Length: 263
Image (cartoon, rainbow, N blue to C red):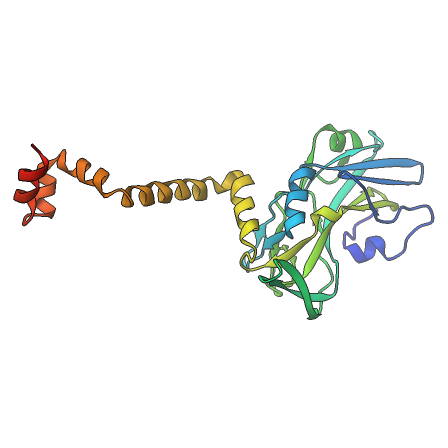
């Protein structure tokens, strides 16, 4: 029985007929081999492309941070009666270190990257499950977290800051490790950062992330405060509606204001 879920164990000995990684167009990846024709669709592909055009950045922390956009896929072509294990790891796209060029508004390679540890595997918590289960609804990897703590003991996926990565989805038939397929999408590439570098990425994350509602409310509140501060007459009228408060804060000029502006 298949018990070693490490990526090295799964992919170290490719079997004849197994599909290699294929990059699909329009959010679709296609894999075939061993009598199965599996199709994988990237959910929210349009949102991923919006980020990709700007150069996607993912925050990483010592304690672990979830990805946004969330990696979510739709599968078809599985055998409904067979059980499958679905996993994700991160592939270092280029063994280089990057920095954000504010002058050019893009990421540029600056030299050799740091040594990469063997990639950890995030096994979907529903694994193993039947093909009918996996094809019933979208498969989300929202529980997966990224960390830059090289000594992490929580099972998070370890990455190096300022390096580029691409998620890979692996599908393994339970009990028959020779039946395995790997898929990936170019638009899911990202740079691991400890703080956002591109302000447009920050704005797009706040705009599209439902958990960023608090940031949007703060922006609206700040805009309202700024608007009021630029209109002194509005503030004056509001204060004059309650003379006692105005007298409390401006006792010296209160008589003059009442005499000239409240008649």
